[in-house]
Figure 1 (cartoon, rainbow, N blue to C red):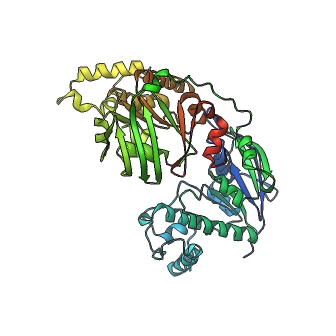
Figure 2 (tube, rainbow, N blue to C red):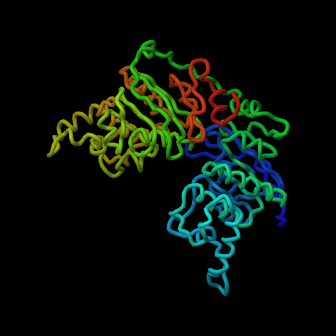
Figure 3 (cartoon, helix red, strand yellow):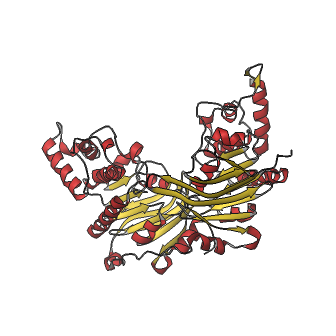
Length: 500
């Protein structure tokens, strides 16, 4: 099936969110019958550029042209009318609807002005047949989305984008949830779409996939497009070099001599499940061990599993004793604390007071009825230690800035004096001043002997703070970086699955 030709160019695109510049100089050029890989490290601006092209966000500046005509998409619907469709890693499916209803949502086939359900079922069956042999035979147009595993949800998301008949398709980390058979099938389809004249923008964290699928690659660094290379004329090393060239290396605090003889607080052996594959690590008292890699590689799942929120196989020991946590409260009793990735939904009761939030993990210690004077003294002490900016302890958490709200999440655990602190991207969305205070606190905790397992999507934090960094890729630990080997080139290369 021949697809109408398209040429898309983006020049000097800028996107700001308040004082944060997500994209400072985004440039891209792709046309029919071409696969363009878009790559860069965490925070480089890949997803922002993709969302500008698809009308999800509006640029503050820049020139976007389709077939030579200047355009500015006000919504994804406007982009789809121009023949541009996208598949994102964050799924847009409605759980309570069927496969067919999700695929055709907003553009259902009609007959005489009413939904033609039979036609919708037929078209859906044709789309599902594209992945025949790579999914369960029992998957049908009438299957409810909430019953599907992640890989099949991702396939439905791909078919949904395809149902709009796009001239240009953006695949943003679309293979992350797929197994090898499904990836092979998708790549076969991409090859066919390319021959039919479709243009494809492929965002991936897997260097092997980029060299297998793409014709050329555009690299972003710190929100700026820094180069485009023909895949046949470049190497993994050159692309990694473009991703990090000119970025300064951080000087880390020298590892404490005491670490060499510090007792092992946490030992993890062959932990598997929920996307994790044979993860093993050791963490000593007073050590800050980083977890790196591009986002969505199993870092959050590892932290949740260690906190008893996910059931996995393998062995975990804390202070030499086997830990089989069935619930986070079991982990808390062993001196484990978790600062979650989403403070609003997982870490705080936003409409409750600061004091109530600080008490959440420790309320039993204040008795029934609660000894309010002691609770207030403890709350005031931790607020002072963390330098919280607030009206009073009685103020609701939703009155605080993002940085101060995150201090409440951390403060509630400091009241318990944890021996093992698990941090899930704790400075995301936090201002520079609060970050600096947070780094200072981490160093104080290390000096007290707290063992810290620290996932960050900010490579600079990992390079500047950590004693060692474990790089995760596809749910497994791909590399351990320490000493002179803990540098930006090694970190980015391991994150992308490139050869060192």
